Length: 385
Image (cartoon, rainbow, N blue to C red; front, side):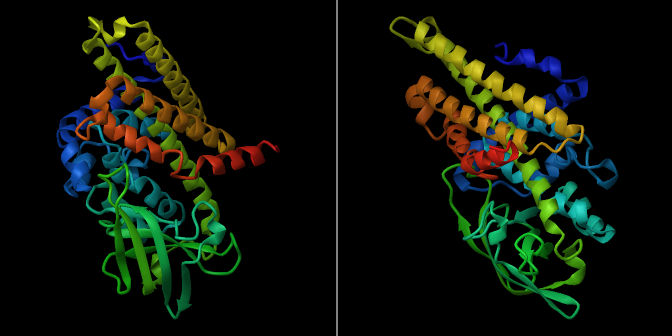
């Protein structure tokens, strides 16, 4: 089958196309055969991190001299497009938790942090998670209450974090803490390691989608953390956090167009084979036109993400554009999911179906990384509306 948005590939260079193909091959051979089992178990083996690293797919976007594969946000989009063919967004999200956990350490950390945390994680030897959201604070980080108090050469951290991807299995967590009462200037990152006294997984959370990625509620009960685990100077986290949010939102936007394209291709393939009233579904104008409209929406979301991604790769800081891309791709993915399930009918509602899994997964996109409503607020303020 000709890919419905293949004409957009003219915007990609040979390296990007090869990377996408490698990621797709990995997903189809390593992830897809296990997708249903891992989804039902709400977990995938830790060894998959090492397997992905050896395949050159775990550290894309991170500097080669630190153990990554190099590349830009566009190369990360290619991995997302390839990985979606594993038929589970949860595995992709779990493997990708380092993509939000390591950048704050990379931006403000020391050489000691690089050797202890960044290198082994990019090699798939350790697992990292980012802990920002709390029961009473999400995108509004001014509401963060988890506090780190200086105590001699250490800090004592107390509080809780919620909805933490890879939080159950993480060897260390990059934790946003309050070190002073300044709403934004009083935020500092710390690396909290598994086994530190007072640090625990208080709950393994069960979700509608992204089931294969473990999600945790974390508790910090007077956790004593050495000063060398502080990332950057006290109060330095806010600007780093804003950049991390931008990267996460663009990654979710890419997940949106990749998911939508996967669902479109699956629906089109089914419609060419399934017969109703004496002919295949694509023989009915109503189905052909629906698929045509779906393809148009996917192409528009993908083109927007590529355009924004190219500029971000060049170093532009695009607050409004990234928020627009996330909202638009999330909306498209949500609509395509509905249409794909409708075309597949009963098969689209079965848990062993990749379409059913991805359709559940995309519901998180308008929520994760900042809700659609928050993105619209950001867009409006940035444009002076």
